[in-house]
View 1 (cartoon, helix red, strand yellow):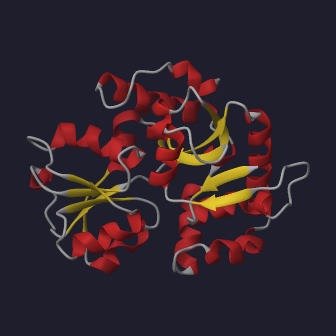
View 2 (tube, one colour):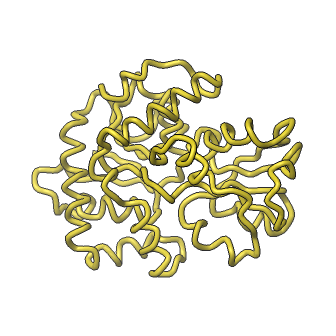
View 3 (cartoon, one colour):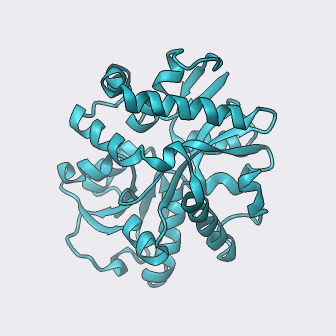
Length: 277
C-alpha cells in the first residue's frame, strides 16, 4: 500500500511498526516522505498515494474522494502554531500590511492564522509567502520576511534564531473554543477500507508506545538534524490519545474549525457529515 507522511518525529514514530512489517495482517507500506504542503496539493488534485497525512484545513477540498481515518493524526492541546517576529513587541498591529511566511496555504496553521488575524490585525496582513516550514525561521531572522508562521519542532527551537513569539495560535484557539487543536489528518482514498487502515494505524501507535526505544533509529534518521531531546519532546507533544482515537472532542474540534472557516468563506462549502463517513 502506498502512503505519504512527513519525516517529522511524530509521523515516523506513529508509523514505525507498520513500516517495518510488525503489524499482523497489515499490508506492506511503500512510503513517500513529503512536506505537508505537497500532500495537501496531491490530495486536492487527486494525485499521490492512497493514504496520506494532510492538514485538517485541507479536508474540504478532498472529502469527496478521501475518507478521514480516525487514527494516526495530530490533534492536541498546547501544541499550536506560533507567529514569530524579530521584534519583542506583542502588538498584533505590527503585522498590518506586512510580509508573512506560512508553511502551506491549506494548512491548519494558516487557517488558524487567518481566523486570528481577522480579529487582531487592523487592515489585514500584506503579502503571504508559502515556503517549507524549515526555511521560515531563517527567513525571519535574516529580515527577508516580517513574520513567520511555524509548526512542529519550531516550538522548541525558535529561540536559537533570536526570534520572539508574537502569539501562540493554539492558546488562542483553546481559550476561544475550549477544544483541542486539529493539525494533521490521515486520509484514505474512498476505494480503500478506512476501517482496516484505522485498525492497523492504531496497532502501530500502540506498538510505538510499548517500544519507544526501538523506534529511535528510524525517527532520528528522518529527524532533519534535530537532537534526540527535541525529537522526544516533539513526539510527547503530538502523539497522544487523539492519535489513537479522535473521539468526541476530536471530531468536535474538527467540526468547529471547518464550520467556522466555512462561515467566514475561507474554505469551500462541504457536508460536515462526510467527516464521519
